[in-house]
Image (cartoon, rainbow, N blue to C red):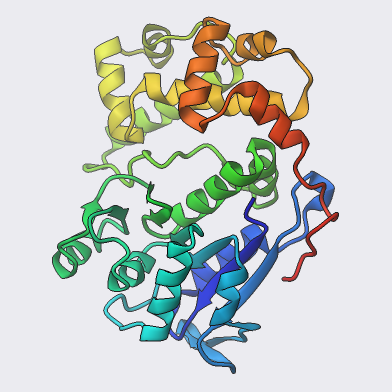
Length: 329
């Protein structure tokens, strides 16, 4: 359930990544229905760690605490070419071998690649660093477009703010859509960017900006009307475009198709309904906008590996905030 979160702290890590991780898993948000987390800063050696910009970090655990963690998060080094000590790399290999999810933010992918964990696996980093990652570690399947990807329990994210998207996604996967939305609200950030959202527009222009605004307005309207039988033609009409032009611009802006985006949002809505209401499954399917209960069950099972009923049971049996885990941040 990812209650114990370990930060891999070493000299030169980016303060922004450290702040993102701390803001997502550090505060006690139990009053908002978010389970408490135990967040620890784990380092090879005790004592203050120097960060860029004249900052310092005081670790509170050694690397052995990684064996206690449910999730290990690797911030980026400000200089991706800086080597990581072998004991740190060995610890990452050990926790991954145990099946613990490991997430690297931005250039943190270089650390996982140095450990050999990304060989033969998909990975992403900041688009500016992607060619460098591919050249230095040719066995890594580097992708340039997505905001974040997962391969065999190894998560990597693109640059800067996409680390927020990945962290919120991990909260959502472990603790449900409502918990992730509560964290996002407290951070005053949107919880809706998925991993296949494009990192950037190839040719930003005033026209492209206007198109992006129109598409954002369409997405917001669609979120308010998910229970309706929406299709590409309807969304295109809202944007004032032809369906073909709309689909092309939508994919360029988000990195996914309108159909896949709608399906993902409907699955998110269904999870919220299963978590916080007692509506029967057919009613959940209807309110989330699925054409039939059968279609809903098929899509839900394919996405989450369990039936809607089993998901609801698991959510209901999750530890209540404050019962079993104490916030250690």
